[in-house]
Image (cartoon, rainbow, N blue to C red; front, side, top):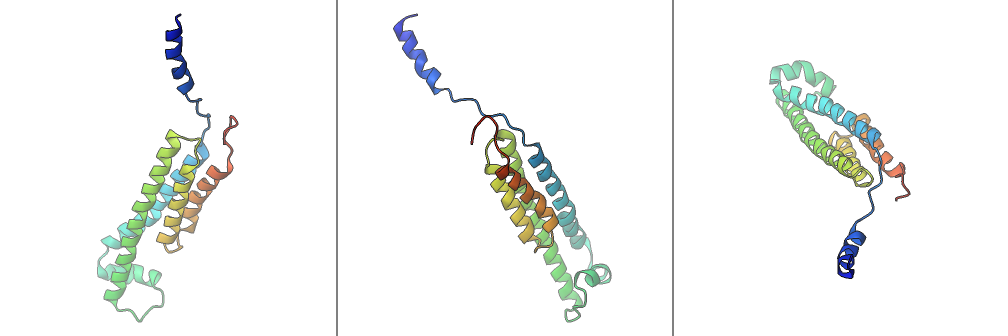
Length: 159
């Protein structure tokens, strides 16, 4: 082999990055999936039910449970408050699912990185704050997944 051919091959050999460490993030993916399904059932179910009720059914079924002893609100005001809460839960659900989807995509493409943990932390925070602290058990799954991204070491000696 000539010296020129060897010089042409040497930079290519040096430019090849080392292989990525092999790691499986099965627990994180399961926790994200459980959180997404529970958020869909709770937040989406509430939004769907409340936004499909008429005012009379809302006053009979939902108002006593949702507002309790708040008798100072008229029926129309209570109905509007319930529909607003349903719309807010629906928007929160869309944002939580979008953040969880980004986390899953990043986990699947580069499982050795910790960036998906930040996306899961954001999904948990949105779930918690968007549900007005009601859905804390659901947000716990996202927070637990984010914590596993931070705590679980990457094998092969990588950071």
